[in-house]
Image (cartoon, rainbow, N blue to C red; front, top):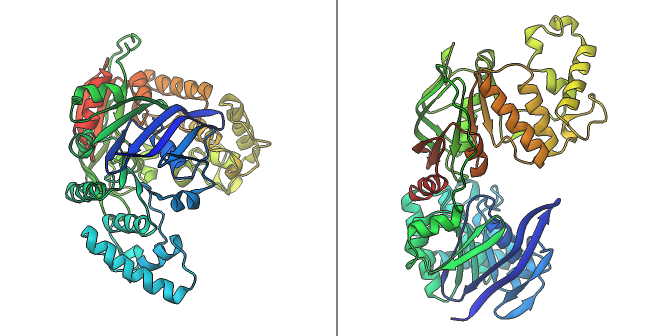
Length: 500
């Protein structure tokens, strides 16, 4: 089979952070080629370069043997490259046909929309999809929206199809149907790149697999010949010994999550019967690949999402699952959410207001009708210095003007301005530099040493391994395995991929 897509020596940095470091990849016509790796391995970045969304700093790209320098996604489409992203790029108020017409412009709207409708029906019939071109995208299920994305790129003439984590949002039955269609597309001569973290998909449906780790390509293998253990080791790397940590006495249970069920906004259940407990004086790390219910769990714990059922028990108030966030805060829960501007900061308010909002109710700054704003500004200024929050010209400036990393530092400074009993930290070091990451880790360890129960939810397995006293692995909304420190990296990796 001829090589349809080839990338060589690809390097890409974002704000000085190396995302790809000499990565290589090639896919042949008529094959399903899986691209396997942990979160942050560089899989999506590499494929975004192949699809013209990013320009590589160095390296070469060849399409059907011809060296090309893509000027953008439209240029990639003209060369037969189409990418279906994990987060769909559809206009929900528009119909299916209107969305496809946007991506594949025609000279005249009236005749163009008619032709698109006909093409949608024809393509859907060939693929076995039940898609009505007149339906509004916002009324479709997640699986149907993904089908629209696939039809959209195929109508555009795609012969190199890149699917980025296509089964992450699907049920098992939907995923199986999709992967059968992927095989049929490959049999028709399409080169299919399947970006995934699921070993069972690779073993069952891929003709070849390339493994990436840390922005580099580490191997290309035959998934039928390579064992699951070999692929797991290539994906997560060799196990390195963890630093010795002195055993500390554990306290009583401060947080207990029992049979918790949560749905995301479209109604799909993302947390299914999750149960775990955290004692005072320990860090409980939750490892897992993104999209397995971690975000919904974190939101439920901090009170930003109401569970469908189950218990969130806190020492003191008891079950707080149906109660507002204020009850949790009064019980000493500190929240460090991944989406800081959605759940932790008011961008239109000042740095000082955002820092002190958690303590105004305590009376620290006087009664509500006579708040000491001078003291608020002084406390905020001290926190900005102590936590190295950059980009603050004055604590009266709006929080929205802070970069992502510095906004996170502001949140952390506020949450640790008191001594919390329970800490829920979701990707707390995301967007921070090395020094700031180390400072965040020190704060989490210090909170644990003071007796707090810390829940650390992170897609960075190194962070989980370095900080956690116990580790739970979350897959498809469930805690599928637990490990005590020192935990074996490969065992955790197997739990993450074997249950996916």
